[in-house]
Amino acid sequence: MSDLSIVGLGGSYRVLADGRAQPGHYTSAGNAIAALPGVQRRLRPITRRACLCCGQPFNSFGPGNRLCRPCKEGVE
Ligand SMILES: [Zn+2]
Image (cartoon, helix red, strand yellow):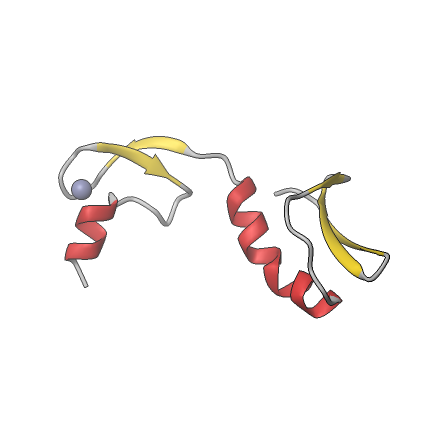
């Protein structure tokens, strides 16, 4: 997990991850806070896993992500 923080600069807000500014400017601290989960998700390491359904390798974002996109979308 990266350490996320929010800084306000001249009326716009940025998200920092481990002290590094992330892409994206927000007009309020509330917007920046709302964007934190997305930033955290983007920073997560991606691993190649075999899909539990079809066995095809795909980019997994974490332990809860074990199905490739076509299989996940087919299993609604
Ligand atoms: Zn699959």
